[in-house]
Length: 158
Image 1: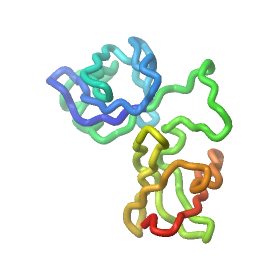
Image 2: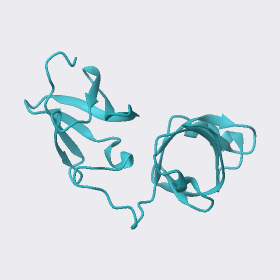
Image 3: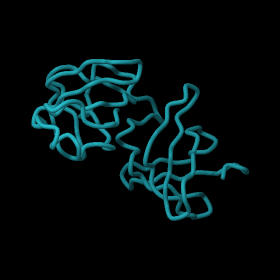
C-alpha cells in the first residue's frame, strides 16, 4: 500500500509513496507490516496526492529509518474490506513468481504501477525487466497459495 522513499529528519520519519486508494489505512494506531514486522502508525501527514510522511512505533531514529528505504508497507488485512473476484491487495502480489503459459519463468513482481486504467506489474528476473499489464487478457491465473501467476504475453510486449 506504500513504498518507503527514504528517511525524513532525525526522528525516524519516513517519506513514502502512497500506492493504496484506501487513505484510512494510515490512521493513528493502524498496524502496517514492514516485511513481516508489524509497526503501529504513530503519525501520518499527507504531503501530496501520492506522497506522505509517516512515523511508525519502533522506528525512532534516522539510523533505524534508513534501512527501510525501498521497502513496501502492507496493511494487516481488514475483515471489513471485501475484494471482488480477481482483485488482490498489492501486498499479496509483491514477490509473486510469474510464468508464461509456455513455461518461461519471468521472475518476481517487484513493484506495481497504478496507471488509472489498469495496474502494471513490474517483473524482474534473469531475463531482465518485463512490464505486465494487469488485464484479464494477459493475467490468466493467480494462485495465492502457490505464490504464482500465469500470464499470456501478447506479441511485442518485450
